[in-house]
Length: 462
Image (cartoon, rainbow, N blue to C red; front, side, top):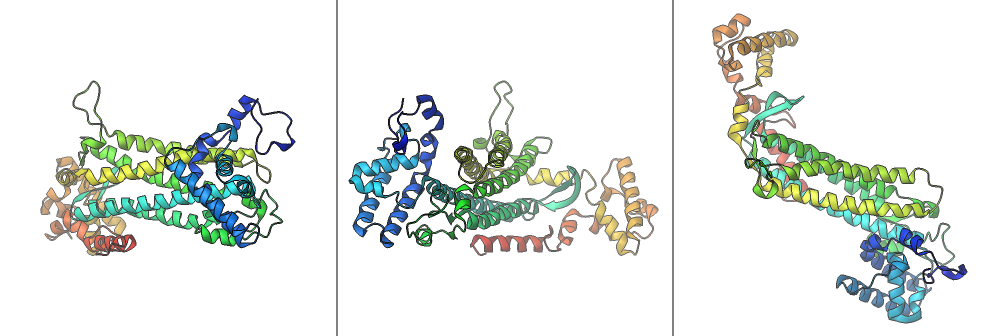
């Protein structure tokens, strides 16, 4: 049987060793030590400010907590599984360092609101880190887009060649996605970084605590409005996990493009050696394993989100020990998001695009067909008729095994006598891209405007 617990006053017998091993969380929640020490220090200062502790007692507690932080940072702290969690381990060590005054730190709070505070701070800190990494990725995409503003490639729908676009436009589409992700995270952070301290176990406390002071000390946006909700809410974890799921979804789509483009059948990119692997049997292989793994890890992140939703859906009010299951999946998800964003920024920085392969692909698939239809509309042909006539021209070119622009003027005029020699400038791919300068389009002025907005958002300017 285990030794006496800090909460074990009413228990005559120690805990079974298997139960202790099953219920302990210090093996993983020790990651919360910075947030726990910061929260406890703010709580001690608040207790002194409210006259619940003396200023000297609060100062002693804060010095002891700082000493513990240094012990942990220097890997000198001894974690004890029998003390169950990060909170009890730190409080126990604090009492060893400062004496009985350490036992006063828990005045006016419960582990229920304490863990809610610690985890809110940890999730918020993680979300802010994701936002910084997203900004770095958007900067990389903007840099590569600016570098390839004049590189043309096929744009696809249904993974079939559709219309010519610039490589910049394709890359900036992902920049737009990741910018939305950062915006979502900033919005979520205002709900995540809320102070629950003062809710105590579930009903509040009789001590004259000041949660607003603690919130200010910890750079939080506000305080709880209902003590029962404060200790049982895990929406903040779910919301952050949902935002992370969208980040991985967008990364996975980008990875899919990289996997396809690295295939010699496309040949649009050359993978950097540092972000690829070889085959144990086929010497010629250069596999996009980083992109494939990142694509696969999206499922791992979705699993964390749905797993916690299932855990929470049937819980009665208020705190239940099931809530201990919120941390391990989030810690794993946090590592996945951070590493994935760093790797994608690195891979995109070093990847080599192959403009000549992209340009050559424009000649396969009649990507300028829409230009011919629009040209005919300009000749007052109704669009549906223009669409039909252009389809005939495509069929004629396909039958001859040539590109649409390779048809002679006479052949085109047999399809529609309104076609004149100026059609060939319209069918030019560079001209097709230049003409699409509508807001958000692939035209050069639009690309410059998109980049300017991104630079402004990134705080770089032009």
